Image (tube, rainbow, N blue to C red; front, side, top):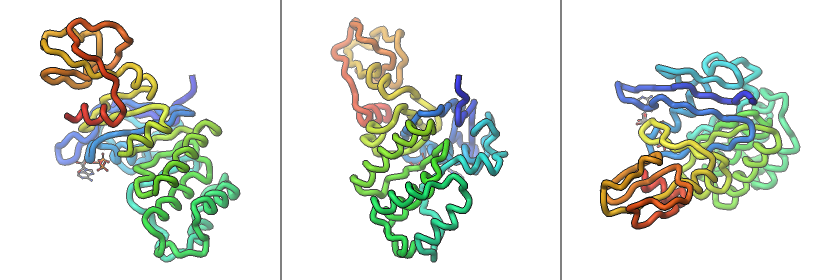
Length: 278
Ligand SMILES: Nc1ncnc2c1ncn2[C@@H]1O[C@H](COP(=O)(O)OP(=O)(O)OP(=O)(O)O)[C@@H](O)[C@H]1O
């Protein structure tokens, strides 16, 4: 078995006696693209930042490339790419100077990839960072995180400010990167169509708990909304993700008849998200 690139084991975190992460177990293996989905305040950023050692969990352990997340060596840091939710620094720099400085930290920097992406996203290296739009800054942050082909890429809502074409292109690059170089990617996004397009796996987080973690195809195939009249319906064969008076969201359905069900419906990722927060 390959060693996970990132591994959360029983990770919990509280802020002001409030549980923000609750016993999270999650592995990112080479080739995985995990889309992290959750409402505002669900704990996504806390989860992602703790992988980089920027937040220390109260309980549990996080291993990154075989090291503890709060004791990462310089060589491991060079193999991790991270794009934060907030815009990055380099104010007062021109794009070319910012890239030159950034590049100096990464011996594996791929100049051709940098040039290709600058051209594709129409960024002029002579332009000042201060004059860039939010989307252009985000594009540059993604180039800075991806041009050294990191083994592990952690992205916190990386494409929220990009236009649909740039989003699509970056998302497909993400996928290619993971497949070509055996990297693993953990990214949060509120854009379910993007997640559906590129993720191999979905991690759904609700109030700090990992409600669902599986391959996207398995989720598509086995998660269903079951409508019923009698609340005595037997759904014990399934994991119940949410249950209300006349319906339930079940996980583990394999096409059989469910006695007492009025309807058994498939759900898009967006519908599932809405149902789980209903
Ligand atoms: N340093 C902190 N001190 C106190 N509370 C915090 C701190 N950081 C985060 N929180 C709280 O933890 C919860 C989770 O925050 P987090 O940023 O992880 O959510 P998120 O899922 O990334 O949300 P969003 O989608 O809005 O970015 C929020 O209620 C937030 O207020």
